[in-house]
Length: 484
Ligand SMILES: [Zn+2]
Image (tube, rainbow, N blue to C red; front, side, top):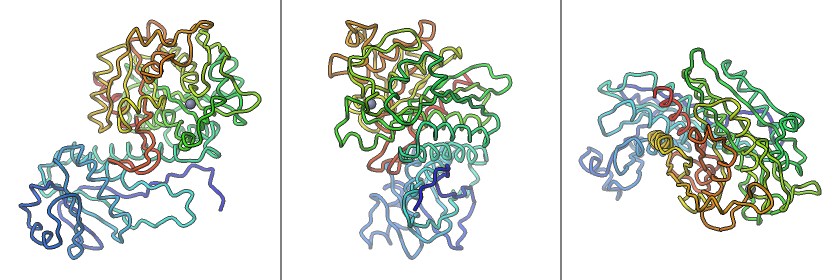
């Protein structure tokens, strides 16, 4: 068996649609409801005979009906319900499922259901010699009263789910294949799929010319050359410009400050931020939003070897600031420092970086929540609101002047790790802040997605593996910023 190096999406293609009546042919039905509403429904009695009283899900074989009970029928539960239904039918031989939601429908609810289904059906099978076949081809919402008319929501759900599933594929692709060059190839392919996207790739010599001393040091011991990928989407009469930066460590063994064996597994996911910004720009371009967006990916590999950068080294960044290296596993911030410098030259109205930056962020917020950092309270609140509306969990982590002192260096301008073991997510954010020029301090946000980017036990709409964290929140923020 030879692994494909061409990019091919792993998500099964299911059609989504709104129908007014359930069609029986080779179809199953699903009812998404609450425990209370279910108790009053016509099925309660039949299910009780099997011991099901409205906790979790139950499949009534005779009627080909799946009942899914959730806490409340809000958009978050409906999205998760959509994923659960799609996931359940992955292993059953039906071609169609039609879903009835036990509540008054609106577009937000319909959108949540479809997005959940399209993300829930995802399965990464590229390395299975005999992947299980999925029969399901259609996923429909039953709307008897014609409450949601817009075809816009179907299009938006498809576009965003496709971007999320693409990001998952990239993140799940093994490090032997998904090298910086591979990410650059994927980016170039994007410009063929969506004409309005342009792509520029900087290779090692270009990074040397750009004086990206921090970025280059991280990649030095790898046999794969680094790439800086710059995607842009510039619609006519766009009034605002958002620049995104993503950490794209295609593998991170920690460098000479080598990770313990257990911590090294899943480090193919250290490119999640870079993959997310490519997913965001793809969605924004496909939705034809009237806003200029750039996505910059710092793609590198952190390895060991005779040429590796060392703890004790001092690196000169593109901004001219010197960095004392005390731990080579704090490499993402070094790559980002130079990418953020490049990004500021584009004169953004808003600059946002996405990175699986610190384990400390996962300790602080748990594995389901991303951290939002920055200097502008209004901008942080705006992003947090967009994230919440998109269904992603995010929370603010506040900077303060005391934590800032912990990254001071005796021999250079700044040190790449803190002198304290506490507050590591924030000190990493403060390190990045050192490379943000005064005029952009209030325009910058740092999003640490280390918690939700990679999933080891499936939750919400996320299967095992890469989750596509950051895509929904980023797209929703840009769409609302365009209107603001
Ligand atoms: Zn690292």
